[in-house]
Length: 424
Image (cartoon, rainbow, N blue to C red; front, side):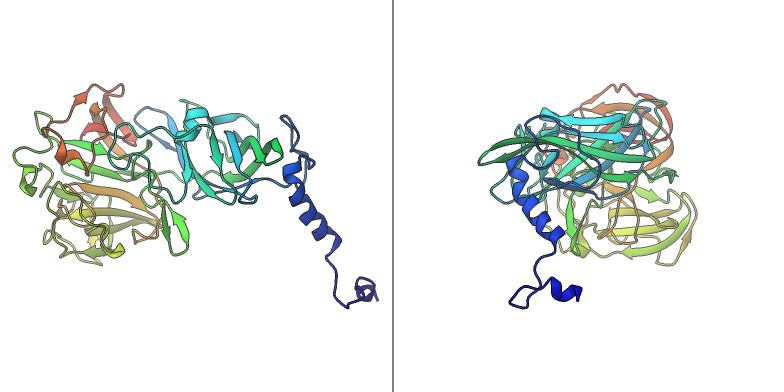
């Protein structure tokens, strides 16, 4: 009876009233008649509302303490303009708030927002080694039907508690052909991770080491967005490239086209924690420095490597090792400090270094990259220019331009920030 009542004369069932209203409301978004889309700032009404931007976090934000003594949260917000391809959205501000108190703990706007947002398919600005990376265009405008990534690196002052739940408040304007309509929306409420980061021993032998491409700036580790098996990953968010530094601040001496000119080449890498060897790859040749090699097949990206399982869902990756130097086999149980192999230049690597980070799976692709800390080290300086494996061998000399760091001194249970020089 009821079903017959909702059929039209053709025998077809018409759109349900709610669905028809939804279709109509989408068409009205750019006409400024829906709640939250007036001509000025508005407070969204409680309950469902249509939002021009959708958003999703790619990982559970995990707090860690860095050498600045502050707590950091580094994660990504995938943001999509859900409107038609002819309707861009100007994003003016992104506020990250404590969902309980509504207190803003981090904010991006203007040039800072432009430098922290880019279309998912665009190459990383500054990936060619330019220092600094070229500034992003302002204002930040997301074309219709496009997806962008917003790189969030929040810093909490000493003693400031980490919110248990975060929410993201976006504001800007829909730029339709008929005019501009301001909007505000609160999206993607997400819990923070209360799992403490692994606190590890050193991954290399004692000495002075340069920590390159570490978090949390515009580096190819921090902003390495990869589409794997149908979804996006930032597989090396907290990866660090390690270079041995000599008494004169040099990372190489002699001919930078020779592997043996690099002080890191052939240096032992050691287990930062006890665990089980779950993956080993050997036999890939070293690349000739300092040229960037062609991109290898995905299974050879990290070159010769060793992966240790040190806790449930936590794996340590030692990558770009020297062929024939590996000292362990899959299934071996190792103690902290056990030599695993030697630093080389295999895989997608231009100059000899150790790539090290923590993963959530035994494989580099696909995996997530949680933060970690080291139990004890001393900061002895920093390097201002961006010097990394693609350009370290192209410097006029192998001597790093090391200057004093505001964080010089002994650190315990801290994560090294990008381009710090450490002594283990």
